[in-house]
Length: 242
Image (cartoon, rainbow, N blue to C red; front, side, top):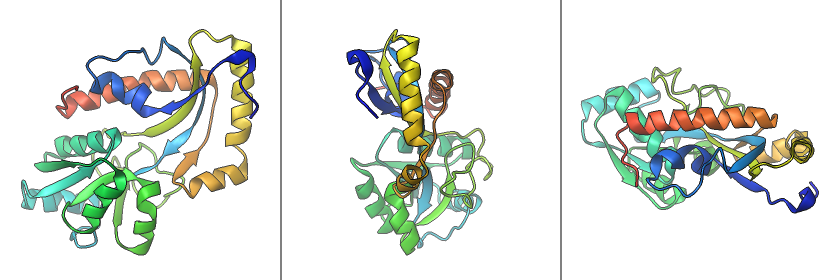
């Protein structure tokens, strides 16, 4: 894609800044709707619930039963806002007593899951994929409302009986507020050409990224809905804004 016309700056961002932060931070120095112009969504990073093979479960239902048989002894690792909220929502909606173990990075979190020091984690598929393929981790479900195109055989958390459950790690392009419609449409067209190119989609899929796009209005409506979704999840899981 060529440089943005007329000197506009583009922001490649996603769910942390435009979905989660309004509910996770007490003092947000920007408005994710009013301060930006939505241009194009670019796709989702797939998040999966994983456990070590040493954990005697193969489904979300079996994990719930295992956690109820071992109250206070089952833990989940997190390394980012989707992992934190997904674990808290799972515990709340399944009525489980789970120990939250935060980490600074996804590889550190997964290392302790694979070593058996932590029971499970909601983690991005890109980080987990090689360990799932090698058998060092077992994937139980994805966190989105619909199955991932990258993991079509893996059920959603909602299919597994935890409903509602929709933790999406998404990305997209935004510009500054009040960009002219002609500029927005031109950028949207160029971004969609790239995102929808088959070989680019295939390359991104190897990184755990489900690439797709849409119109600016679709991204605007999605952001507004996700802000509401994250507010509800944070409230429901009793997470205190920092």
